[in-house]
Length: 284
Ligand code: P6P
Image (cartoon, rainbow, N blue to C red; front, side):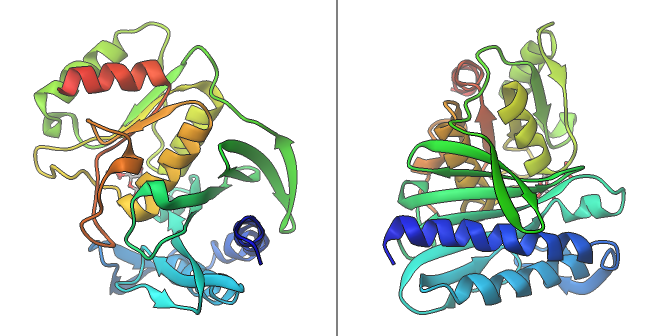
């Protein structure tokens, strides 16, 4: 299969798996004894989604590597593209019945790789409606996913010209002074409203919808921030940049960040170009 067909097959497979992931959520809110490679407790729902997606994505002809936020090592699945999956991003939101998502990045290089090796990225948002935002060849399409079938509802999706929301992770006392000063500037901007739901995909989807800035910045206690480059920063940076926005680790596009290892973390800032430009000015 040619590369574009493989990428679409990956998106199709993630969408078709979404109903089973969603249906399994009510019965899998329990924490397991296991920790993922990032030291976070895995929910039964994380394990279930990871197992389903590894089996199905790994079976696609043209996918040669499967890596998940939930497991230490990437799995060799033959020849072809590499997929990096966060099976259930924001699964801690399951307890309060809030949004969460499945993220997939399709890299044309062995993992770990820079975001410039991405040839596609998508996320499923388990909200009141199950939707998918998918970016390929510089274009973002939003789909409603019904019974695993995708229906395009917004094509050539771009961020609105005027940003409207912001959401920043981490505790305020733990923000470095430069980020705190930027946050204060943003918070005092009367055109911007706070929207932070504790699940990156839910928060980023609001940025795609309303424009603005989402950040999980470098913290005094964690200079690399919290979010993982391969599984969260790169795919979301790829999608937001394809929608006409920007991404940054504080200095450069997330897609230009050299990975240290498969589970390396990175400060994540994504959103409207002007707000990310101002962020980089504030941090440097
Ligand atoms: P905090 C969810 O655990 C996650 O990885 C992202 O989806 C989300 O943006 C962030 O962590 C939330 O972190 O510290 O606000 O709970």
